[in-house]
Amino acid sequence: MTTLAQYLNTSAGSPALNDVITTVTDVGKTISQLLRKGALADILGEAGNQNVQGEDQKKLDVLSNDLLLDALAKNTHCAGVASEELDDATPANADGSLLVLFDPLDGSSNIDINMAVGTIFSILPYQRQGQVSENSDFLQAGNQQLAAGYLLYGTSTVLALTITDKVVMFSLDPDTNDYVLIEENVTINVDTSEYAINASNYRYWREPMQQYIDELIAGESGVRGRDFNTRWVAAMVGDVHRILCRGGLFTYPFDTKYANKAGKLRLMYEANPMSLLIERAGGGATDAVNRILDIEPTDIHQRVPVVLGSKNEVDYVKNLHLNYVEK
Image (tube, rainbow, N blue to C red):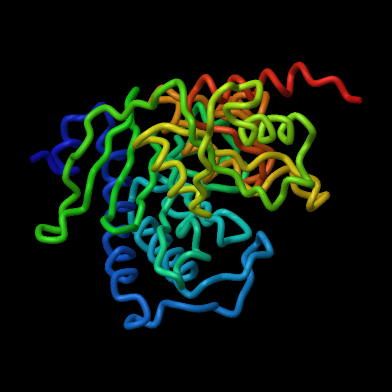
């Protein structure tokens, strides 16, 4: 068996990068333990606050954020941290060479019903060593990421990680408390018959996306000539994990539900790390037209539409948008 520590020692990652990854994944062990205790640990329910996104915070949202923030602040390689739960980035160690962004508990609405949630993280280089980090330091395109991954807290705790040109997967062994390698080279089939979307927002989508879903629903009797199945976890980390395991397409497209939001998902600590994982596993990731990893960010909480997964299906959605002629 290969543990995460052993894998990191032989990977192409720098000692600093490996140390920061270890810090994040060690906190993941604590979050996993708290989730296993559930109501017994008094982690269920609302915290009584809203985050910068205007979303109600769960108790474990706040606790997970604090655990990650405290641990990374003590890591000498971490120059700064940006989180979904904080208005601004938090400076850490000015001499550090890395920046960490994270969604501490993706899918937190699932906590109280004992369904899958997860932690998503992205690691970027820090260009101004010796100076205090600021929000602007984090505004780097996703193609600059040095590593990205997620921890899925489900029936077992699973870590998906990319450092070089491939995606690897580990499972947390409850007996040894070590992450053990279970997949050395995760790949995604280019074709799929599964898709994930919040269909309740259909009336708010642009017409090309409505057309796409209409075609999938028509199935064998429609232009696609085959049937498709809908799968929806209501947590990006769960839907992306399913795609890495067996292919599929996940989308949270542009909609007009809220005029001031281009999409639901955040570019820096959701779309970018997940897109890096998906692309390195052989899939595609766009905002329906443009490659997500090439988007130049303007804000650490910037939102983007997301279409990712099996490459042929992602390209099909892109072509529908490019060829759409407004009626």
